[in-house]
Image (cartoon, rainbow, N blue to C red):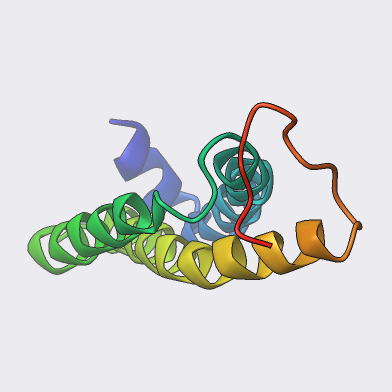
Length: 105
């Protein structure tokens, strides 16, 4: 019902934009926390989430949901890169180290 209303009001682009902003905003602290607590060991979870997002994007016929799954998928893939870059930022001292973890550097 709400999807039909969004389509009828021609709000799909706006909804996709807002949700994209929120998804990307969610991944920023997610990557920081993942690196803080477990380093880069969880990169594969981002990969699995991305693959699931791609599959859902291809499977869904609704353009709004398909687009949002695609944004989620590629934000997950980008999160892999950011996870390794976050480790480098921690090494440089730009972000705090977790005192309970052993670092390779």
